[in-house]
Image 1 (cartoon, helix red, strand yellow):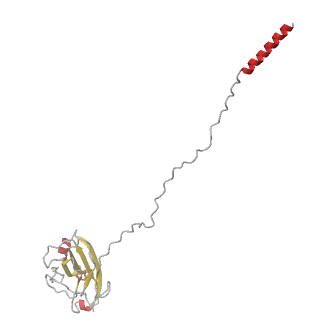
Image 2: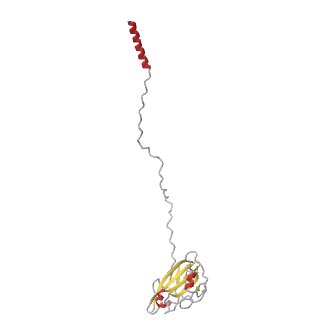
Length: 222
């Protein structure tokens, strides 16, 4: 009986020893939930406008072209023409001056006419026609002679009085007319003979006008 007790005890001890040598089961790893945190911001710099150097000069606006102007030292625009330049005086052409023309100008054409004469004569009265004025000339003195061709090569056309050269203002008594002086800058020399009409001259410079200047003088006939 004691023998059986000792065998049973030994069996129990052996079982306990074997169980202590068996490795424990590894714990199941916990599941990590997906992260909901936003990724860190990128370190790539955002492009910005290139700063202007303090010494850098921005381009300025394109300057406007200088206007082509015609004036007279004898009277202002829209003012009275002195009697000395009219038929009641010495009938002298007035002094004229103009600004520098556009590049490419080869000659000037001057026309003086009276649109107010339409009510009297039925047409615009031409008082002075001068063409092929040299491109390097920017003025003319008072009293241009009525020669067909002047020393500088310019030529005179035929006015409405049937004459060459200047014919001063001469409206009917008591009337005030406006006399239009027009200067054309042309890119050609006109192949016209002296005595050409205004129609001839304007037709010849058609398509060749680079600039045009104009002003008006008034004359009140006594």
